[in-house]
Image (tube, rainbow, N blue to C red; front, top):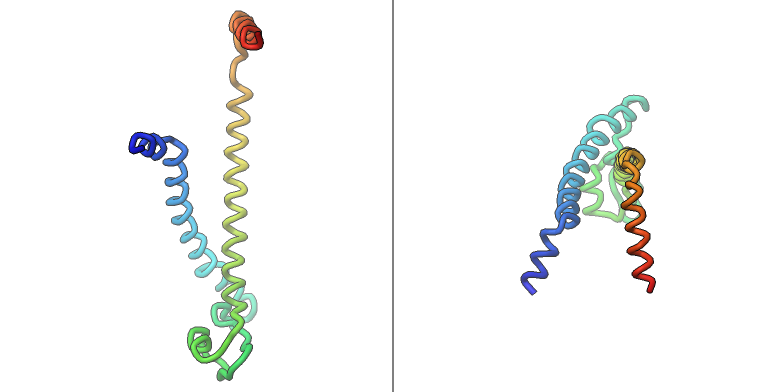
Length: 137
């Protein structure tokens, strides 16, 4: 059982997956910073500087004084934090867009590699046909 586990853990796919998760987590932090530190302040400035999306919410039940920060409002009432949701949704869209382009680039490289593979020699093709015929019998 230990040997099987070692074989599983050392396979390239598992290691590639672990590396992908680690890089994805780091990339997620970069996207969070991009949205929170660059995109959202830019949107705020375009709207006149009066909108702070991180503290935008609607009170569903309870009473909250106007201008109360989201954390304090959550402690005393039930709130719908649409500003926080908007920020996270924007993070997701940016991340999905970047991953889409990365996958597209990898697929393009793979297609070139497959297209540039030299055709098999005639004797190799003949030997494969003989092998396949012997398997059928």
